[in-house]
Length: 316
Length: 145
Image (cartoon, rainbow over the protein chains, first blue to last red):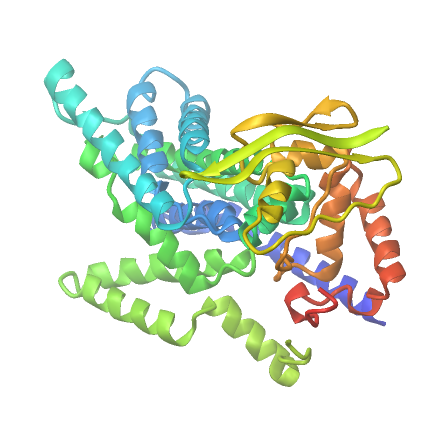
C-alpha cells in the first residue's frame, strides 16, 4: 500500500518536473524580451543559492566565497569570451573557479566556524583587489568589455547549467558521498574516525559547488557587457545566496530553489517600483522570516504536511 | 602476535607531559583495560592511537605496521576503531545511516550501497534496534545511542 502510494507520488513529481522543464525550454517561443531576461537572472540566483547549499548545507561550513568564484567566472568570460566559443569559455569559467576552490579549500578547510567564514570572505576582497591592482598598474585601464551574446542563448545556457546542477545535487544527496558530507556536518571528528577522508570529501565538494558558481558567472557576464573588479566581485553575491537558502530552507533540495526564485523576483519588483526602499523592504522580510520561520519555507511546508504527527518520537 | 604496540609514546600539552615515554602492547586474543586517576592521560593515549591528536615522539604499530603519522581515516580502514567517552552519533542521520557509514567507509575495500545497507540492517537486528532504524539517531534513548 505504502509502496504503491510512494511510486505514484514519485512518478507524479517526475512528471511535474518534466512538464515545468518543457515549459521553460520552450519559453523563447511564446515569450519574448523581458521574460527570458528576468528568468535568466532568477536562474542565476537559483544556481548560486543551490551551489552554496550543496557545500554549506550538509557540512555546516559557512562559505562566503560565492562572490569570489562568481567573479572568477565573470573575469574568465571577460578574458576568453572574445576569442573562444561560448561553451568553451563558460566551462573554463567553471573549471578555473573549481581550481581556485581546490587550492583555497585545501588551505583553509581546517578552519572551523567563524574563521572559515571570514577567510572565505577575505578571499573575495583579495582577488578583487589583486585584479584591480593588476589592471591599474599593468594594463593601465580599469574594467573591460565582455562579448555580447543574444539573450535567448544566455537563457538556454543558464537553463542547462541549472539542470546540470540540480541533477548533480540530487545524486550527491542520494550517494554515499552525500552521506559522508552530512556526517562531517554532524560531527567531523567522529566522521574521521569512522573511516571518512574528511579533507578530501570537503575539498572535492567545495570545488564541485564552485564549478557551477563560476559557470553561472561566466554566463551572466555576457549580459553585463562591461565589468570591473568591483562589479564582478560584489560582496552582495556572497550574502544573497545564503539569505535565499535560509529563507527557502536547506532541509530539502527544492528549498534554496524556492527561496531564490521568490527573492530574485521580489528584488526585480522592488527595484522597479520602489527603487529607494528596496533594500529596506528586503531587510524587513528577511528579519521576519528568520524570526518566524527558522527552518525556511521548506520547514513550513513540512510542518503543514505532517500536521499533528510531529513530536511522535519521544526525545530523550 | 602483537596486535597493537607503542614505543616511547610521548605527548606534551604545553609544558605538561600528558603521556610520557609510554611502552605498551596488546597481544592477539587479549582484552586489555587501561586504568588510572583523572588526568592520567588514558584518553590522550587513545587519541594518540586513533590519531585524533598527533604525538610528539615515539612509534605506534598495528600488526607490525607503523600507524603513527597516518590520518584517522587511514587508521580506521586498517582495522582500528574507537568510540568516544561521550557518545558521538550523527544525530540528524537515521539510525540505519549511522551504521551504514561504518560499512561504507570503514572497510579497506569499501562496499556497495546495497551491501552496506543489508549489513547495517543485519547488525541493527543483532543489537535489537531494527524497529527504530529509520528514526533520527538523536531520538534514541541515551543507552540505545
